[in-house]
Image 1: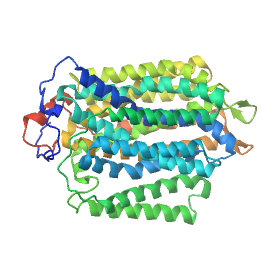
Image 2: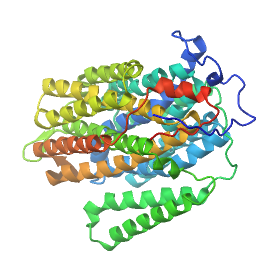
Image 3: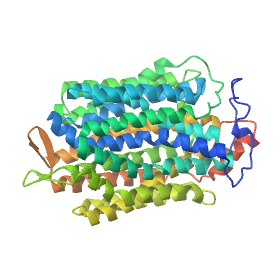
Length: 506
């Protein structure tokens, strides 16, 4: 891999104590301030995943409470808001500092959480989820902030810890939310989400401000609106295609309008001086293949979590539902081993990529995850089977989440980190929205509507897991085009050794 850099210098507001300017060689020991930063960034960075777990656990109760067959919009509305907000957040983070932008987004998310938990009806709840989705880009900015706030030799380990910590958080959050759901119902679980967002805000207050980049003060609003609006229309069309009919005028009009907006967006972004997303970065094969190859299987991993939720929490009803009828707490306990191995895998990736190419680690993660999903398709009928298949999926998922960040660090400079994470999150959210719709379509094909709620048969769960395994295999095929990558630590150190910042790879 060759690096030819062309730096965008730090603005006059940059912190003279920027850790990237010191400790270039790095040390094995972590200072107290570094550990505090890592701890403070972990919860805000993973709250998006934890919120998804809490929301997913709540869905069966919410669907039955409001007697709706449109429960898919509980998650989709959140995803759409995140898609629209992400390009704005990435650029504003470079202009005004990531900490400041993260605090504003977290405050908006808190408002949405409060509307959601107090919603008197399902439409108001969906509105709250839209506002709550503004929190989504915080996860992107946290990962970019790690690159700014840690010495180069520690970036890979810090990213692996933040990304891999989802295993522990996804183990603890279901336990608490499960107890709340069983004791107080879905509103109790969503109140926990409110409290979690408050904790994230307090944690962000303890994070130092990141350096501001020397970018134009004028925000590319036209590009952001075209991108967000175009993606929202496309995802909306896909989401409604099952209910309205794929040939209905409304679906076709929404799809065409969205694709037109995206085509105009590409044209505009290639011409403006400071685009909201620098599509020119995708001309580099290394970055384009890493982003696309990693976004597709990650979307499948996140989407697959919903399968177990409905399988475990829906009741067994002869000829209507083949759910296991577990309590949410029991389901959370069953998921503990998978959570532990997910966290351990993330830490292991941070260590492994010191000596092994992140591409090799990534291939292993894809193979393990695809195997786990395929096994779950056939073995999901009791606790023992779910624990064993969960261990395989958790191992693959942990490798993927940490491995993706290691690959991104290998192909971009520090100045490009936020933009690259923004593109990655955007692609993952788009594929997640599309994958979720495919998932619910597969589930609906083997379902029975009873008392206004769709319940699923065993064949639905089998086909859903196998569909997610196929999506991961698709990601593997795309990932085969990723060129040889260097180690993340070498790339991070190179940021300090050369007078430029735009990483170039063959």
